[in-house]
Image 1 (cartoon, rainbow, N blue to C red):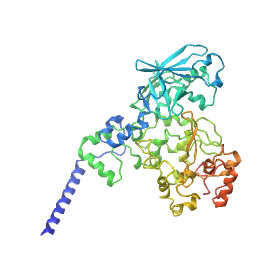
Image 2: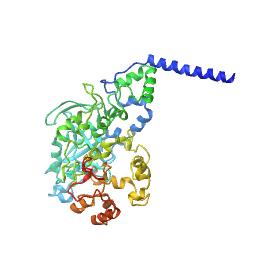
Image 3: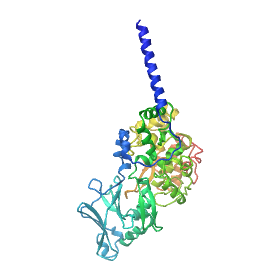
Image 4: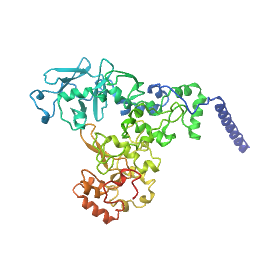
Length: 499
């Protein structure tokens, strides 16, 4: 009797599930795979996506472009002063502050001294960009241009600095500071804002960037910057409870994307990573700049996914290139911070695997790691690598020649050395290359000097010579890649023929 009751109960449960599933199926609205939507703004996303939205709200992506307020200003606007470097002071006037900063009635001002004068012209700060490493200050001109002021704040230095003079290694002068406000790229909302706002729309502009009519959905990098315009998604999900349920089951059981929205993990790698590459160091030809600036995730008018991947490796890595932010080592490897994504695109991990940026970087709290330890040389990041490189996992010390848990025993130490130059705050330091197949070749350091062709071994063992490293790698039998040739094997994935 009890067994029959259990069978009946299970039958009723299964029948209820079947009826519910049928109702959901018949009541839900179908949705098109290809669509065109409008931007709605990130605020509405928080109504359903509470956790992701909360992480994003405290992220650098969200706060990259802000109104000037006490909580957003990180520079010294309490009667601050900035002087030309001592070596560039040519006249007595150059002994005066080149820039003065102050606040007045809740507004912030940067005043530039006129060339050959003791007088200063004040510019009101209307927007601030950045806050972690450096902060850029923008003033709005009468004809709509948000003009980038030439002196920025370095968080590490805790001082102002002339960013472009230092990037281009030029002479500092008051005249040059004023000249910097006439360049095309000083019109921030026509040049830089594409990566610092959501849905930038340049309605009208002058050829010389002296006038601008520009709109955006929101300042900062909002949800729709990565997920695409969300109006249709919002309308569909708000329409019927059955729509939300059907969407949940389709994503869970059928591996479909959410209705009318982009979800990178369900897209082809090149399409998905176009979102990241657009701003994070893709190293592109000048003729592609407008394509990158007007890119948005979603579909074009022909129903094709927007995809920048065919341009990822198009620009030649000319050995010794010295252009600011997109420098190239003399051995052909990416060097400048503007080539960071390029270093990944040039790796075998990009070409031969489905590895993606958000495997390591949290997609919503973008400064954080996707799981504990993945952004540092650690046991956790080792485990991430060794989940594929299982033959090394069997005896790590045999491969690394270093005691487990010490510097040199971690995958990142040798295969993601700090060879990308970061000068965004005026203090040049090196961050990790994202070409994870990089193997030290001290022959190149011997040929060009370790300062011109660094290798992971001598980055750690700075007191040793490249010759010492060559002998060690020969002694260990880890020398199949050590060819005495002008270019590094790992400059591109195609060139990495010996491992």
